[in-house]
Image (cartoon, rainbow, N blue to C red; front, side):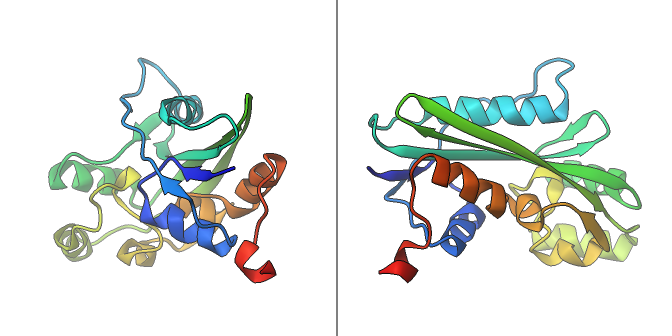
Length: 193
């Protein structure tokens, strides 16, 4: 049985290492992540995760893990910004308000799929022009849902969260550990050896 991570995210790889899991292979799926018309954020996140899981080729006895993280402002899905202008638009919309960060996780083994979505509440402080421009210049917003990563420089903009910190980073560890154990994965293999 091989463990395959269906994600190119270095953050997810680091978080899995906290569970003592090192993937046997990393196979980021290439799917269209465009939201459907009137699709709500949580449903979108779960659908994209299932589509990623279906797109990862693996042997029947392999365990595959995929995840997707979405930032939602009400019903609006804030994906990965196309450019710094869109990143600024997202950050200004989030500034001074609470929003949701949703991470859906799905694990496949044989013909069975286990999945879970974790929703966390996040508050971003109001941003000065200087803070916004310095952050945009850092390029840390690139490839990040909602144009920020809580574990990076933008962490200084987040005074309050309610929920799963690791879920906001991109892989809720408690829930992921439960899904992997249900699929027959042994956690903390390095520590047990």
